[in-house]
Image 1 (spheres, helix red, strand yellow):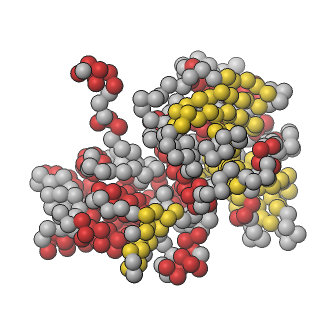
Image 2 (cartoon, rainbow over the protein chains, first blue to last red):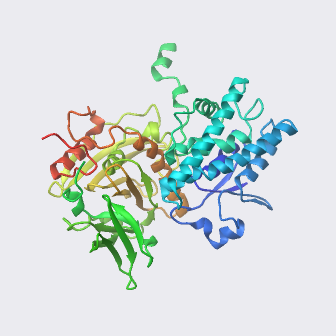
Image 3 (cartoon, helix red, strand yellow):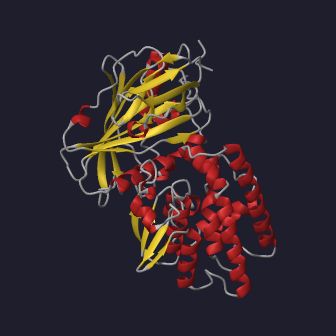
Amino acid sequence: MILHDWILSPNCYKVRLLAALTGQPLTLRAVNVHPGRDHLSDSYLALNPAGTLPILEDGDLVLGDSAAILTLLGARAGAGWSGQTPEDTARIAGWLAFAQDLSGSAGQARAIDMIGAPGSLPEAQARGRAHLRRLEQALAERALAGGTFLVGETPSIADIACFPHVMLAPDGGLSLAPYPAIRLWSRAVRALPGFIEMPGIHRLHELSPEPEMETELR
Amino acid sequence: MTDPKTDPMKDQWLPVSMSADLGPARRDTVVMGVPVTIWRASDGTARAEAEGRTLAVTEDYDHLWICLGTPALPLFDIPEARQPGRRFVPCGRVRVACSPLRAIENFLDIAHFPFVHTDILGAEPQTEVTRYKVDLRENDTEVWATKVEFYQPQASKSATGGVLTEYSYRVPAPTVSVLYKTCPPRPGERDVIAIFVQPVSETVCDVWPWMALFDDESAQADLVGFQQMIFVQDRSILENQVPALLPLDPGREIPTRADLTSVAYRRYLKAHGFTYGAELVPA
């Protein structure tokens, strides 16, 4: 599977992350999106008329939308990544749509603030804040019901779809400090075996044993 | 706050755009709080205006540089950039809500590599910054740090495996830093990696990373992506540094030996009166 990728894109990172968590190898092809705008070149528009990344090529199958790619990789991974019941699969679809809203709000704020994308930063931030509050409420209710992840007992593509834009919200001037349930969920996602980082999303350094502690134990 | 009308930074060359992005359409940008309009005239030359005045401009290293006042010096020279066979990699601008001086200071720091650029530019437990040398050159107009050695798991896009990398750092202007580092494919040469910092205000800057490499293998997109990855790992750290303005008063913070370059940079800023983006030192 070839992933046409940009290291700073949250939507590309979703795919890299899910692939890493589920052990599905990807061949990465870096695209010079900024400053090159190569994703709008004729050859890339032929591959994906929407002019966006990521693009996944798997034989004859070409997918130019991150939700579609997550759906494919999640279905292949099994083990609940795409939902164990019809109800959960539908709930996951709802979160995939919510992730698109995050992309158009917190994600847009980040693009405006960081690389000068067009648009109104205060308006994108206001929309992003509203979405973060919705997510906080949902995760807090899940936590009260004993759940860690957005849908079901195990992580699913719903978590992976929402995670990058939420974690990168501070890049667009949106603090995550007011959202304890989101922070707890972020810890759970980052603690998953096989977790990988992207610039702006850090691994759980604080969980590694300190060198002195190791010495003492020896 | 420092008055941009009197700070000597107004007489420095400051980057405002990649040359490739400059076209006939006028574009607005901000330098030291001053709105600046830039464009490329029909004769191919770059133009800049601010407050109804025509500004001095120059183009080099794939970027457009403007001067709000009267240029104190010609644009700094990077002789290595004239060597045949180098590839030039402008990486586009990244805005950071931090002092332009803090962006430079962070670029000069090695000690954070294992913690911020984990498994790329550094890794625990090899965190020690060994003794290196710092001096002022070019009539005290440049800060240099040399013989900086550090173990790096993946020193560059072309590196395969960990190497002990040797760095030299150079500050040829208050908002420019150039580093020279071991070039894995050509051991006799040094890769050149720079950041050109546009001071938008005292607490906001646009950073234009740029590289001049010997690398015939990597795709341009890979090289750009590698540098963007490194720089954006720093961004959230920079935006959370306190105080926002760079302290120049030596009593304000306690440096360690690994901070020699930073100490020299702060002294150089103070000696030249570059206080735009710095905390004012009580007289």
